[in-house]
Length: 164
Image 1 (cartoon, rainbow, N blue to C red):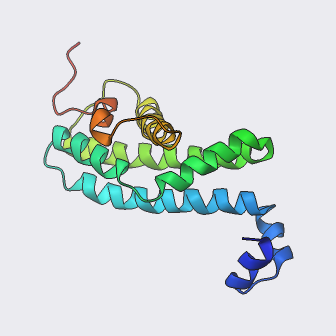
Image 2 (cartoon, one colour):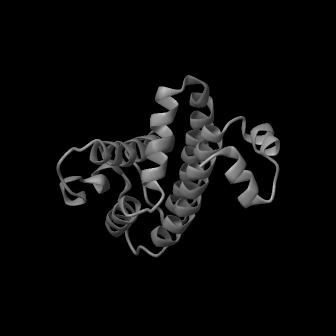
C-alpha cells in the first residue's frame, strides 16, 4: 500500500498524509497505537465490572491478551527498532498508554479501596511490557499459548492493605 493509496482512501492528497504523519511508516505506527488505545478503553469497562481484585487481575489479563490491536502494535514496536526516526513516535504513544492505564488504575483502586505493592507508574509499565513482550515472542515464533503466561501475575493490585 502506498501513501497515494492511503490518501485516496482517506479522501486526501498524498502530501497531506506526509505533512501530518511524516511518512507512511509513521502513519502506521499512529494507527496501530490508536487501535490499542481504543482497545484499552474497552478493557477498562471489563475491569470496572470486576467485583474484587483477583477477578480484576484475571479478567484484565485475559482480555488484554485477546486484544485485536496487539499484533499491529508489535509491528510498530519493531518499526521503532529498525527505523530510529520512528522511535520518538512509538515512545510518545507508549507514554500515553502508560498514563491512561495509570489514571484508570488510580481511579479504580481509590474507589474500591484496593492497594498495589508498587507505584502505579511501575504497575502500568510492567503490565504492558509483559503483555507486549508476550506478543512479540509469539510473533517471533516462540512456542506456547496464552495459558503459558501469567499476565495476571504481573499485576500487584489486591483487596487488602499491604502489611509487609
